Image (cartoon, rainbow, N blue to C red; front, side, top):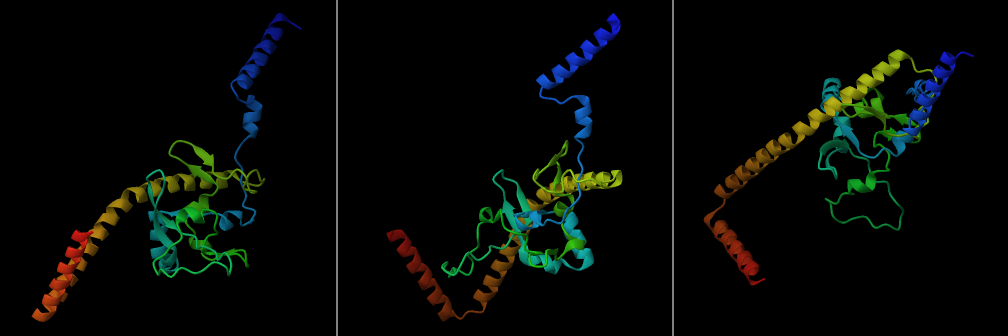
Length: 241
């Protein structure tokens, strides 16, 4: 063995040791660790998905296909712990048994934080079937791959489909493009939602005030006097507290 060959082997060995010390795998191992995915239809992500973020792309698709009415009962607005506001597909709280008394409050709702492990409301557990598969949200189309604007990441490392063979380059490219589109569309929604909410709230208050003024204009003088008396009593009670 020549001195040159020995030096090359030492250089390669030292590079491998350096990579391991830095927490990196050797180059050959890094090339093997490519993302591959094939959905196994295990229904895991549908049974314990929790709230599913909805984008402008989803709303446009549903409106175009005339199916938005199927989603409306399950849409809700959720302000996350990090302060971001999302339009979500809200899971339905499953009954916990006969011992639990139903709420007498018609406006009572289960907090979203208690629904993080509940199934998607549009998934049929008995038939193991998505009821809106052709119109499923972007978030479902790209799961479990996500894109944050800079990097791709796997949000569910325990997903049985990760590492499955058979994913083509075209499928990988399409999944990455979908993940990027999800990131873009979700950003659009998070910018638009607070603005739209303020506009809708303002319009609602205007309509409410208009209705109240119209109702007041139709009241008789006697009814107006009675209403004024009620308001005065309420104010007196508040002052005495």
